[in-house]
Length: 218
Image 1: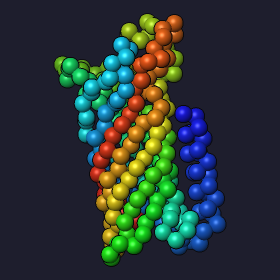
Image 2: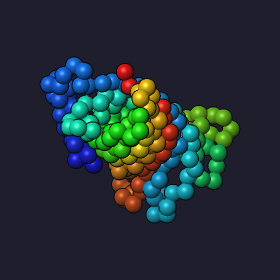
Image 3: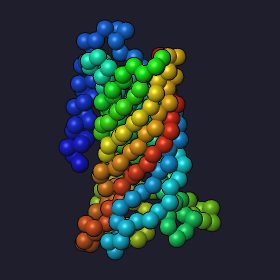
Image 4: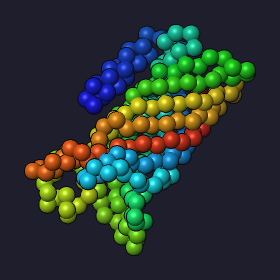
């Protein structure tokens, strides 16, 4: 997954360079906000498929459209993204707040009085904080480490801080520059830590989600 992170970083750098060389009216900025339905998929320690439940979460932030060619753009963004899941067999809910940096290759051909939006690209996420809300209302804080001991795995809830994966979007931008879009996110990097002295290679937790958002381009 380091390759995905390096690719995203390289694309962000390319976008920054392109923005410096583009005309002032060539690069536009916008805001975006909406609701996502998030889950954590993968496999448990017993190698069985996770069957958690979707939870609604807020996503909001800023994006920039950097022109590459006619109808083609590079769209880097900086988004606050709530993620998590509702665990199977209980009413315990995992809440995680991320700062996501998506970099989307965007195709925007004219369609009617507006423009269609088709996009795909990688994202990198950095977890800010998190908690597990238990059925009785108590909350326990999520801790972030890449590698933990067996005793830490028993005593607290740990995740990796970094996330990475792919984004897809489909939408429509009206002539007023107001836009609606459907988006999907597929986590490709596991977010559960390695446990020292325990072979948990088969245990994989990955963020996944889809949602609807509204945007406005200035």
